[in-house]
Length: 181
Image (cartoon, helix red, strand yellow):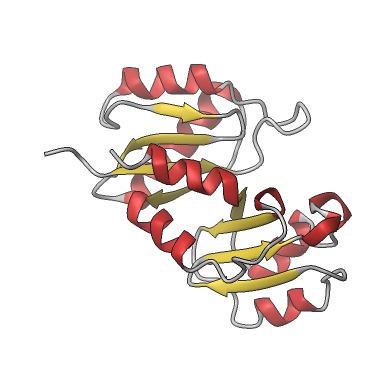
């Protein structure tokens, strides 16, 4: 029987030259350490595919410490199993979004603050939409895209009260495929 696979999602790595975490080196470190199954990565933005652990919180903490020790980067590591990713896509509140690259699922480390959505709605630009589905915040950035949004990382962090990392719908679909086993 094949082990369930998961995605470890690193937040804000390899963006504009900051928080550099070489994915090939991280993959090698994790494979050498063992206990993760066959580790693979997808694109440089911090998507690590491995076996789903019995203790997700412990693995996230272990990988976060490994990244800090090896690369000097402190980044949240957020785990989603294959089934979590499939459920996220099924719960997509904006199937009518104009473009997959403008629609993002922000995967949260934990439960957001109760008033997070109301707080964020006040910051939306024309054409933007948001919806919370469990521990996933969906953001449709509309035609303006991420770069014209006022939903910056500090704004999201304050409103949500918990760390998260976003992936566009195209990437989420690819992660579903890669974690299928």
